[in-house]
Image 1 (cartoon, rainbow, N blue to C red):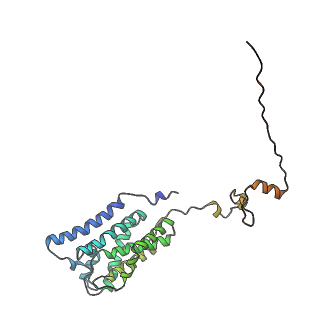
Image 2: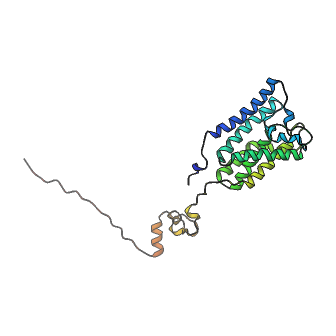
Image 3: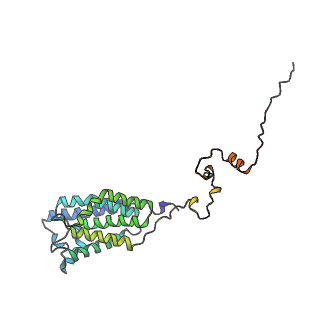
Length: 250
């Protein structure tokens, strides 16, 4: 069965990242326009009022730099998620936001945690681990690409820099791993070649017949087989002779 049935481009691959980026930028511009600060809507750990940030915090950013640093990663990872996991991407987004937010609420410092970086860690973690678990060559390749581009993000799940919510990053990483383990995804069946079949007979394979028991290449298989069986062959050569033109006159 063709892989196109499972990995097929659609408008959602562009629309979903565009809507996400547009939303977080519009919220930030609205804060500037109204001259308000909505940081208090973020996750505040271990308080009932802080639970609202589980849903609202991904849309709130503290500065243009904070917003800019999150824009490109969220756009790329969302596009990859929608393209390669089109059947479950909505579940990954919803559960990823909830789980990462709740983990942040449970382990975070007493401060407001804001930003969509938690979801970025959800996507990076999910795409990496799910690709490894499925063992499909395209998804494994995607996992390696994520590691190559965003492997440095791993350091920020630890408290190595002040002012960064490492708890939110850790929550996203954990959420992505859990979703990769628990969520089922359909993948194309792996193509099985003739030589992988249990009833495969090497003697019937035209290519393998060109090698002897020691692995030496045999250029003329037919002649070698005749030598082994003791059979002889008769070579027949045909000569064609044209008849001379007939003499004649007017």
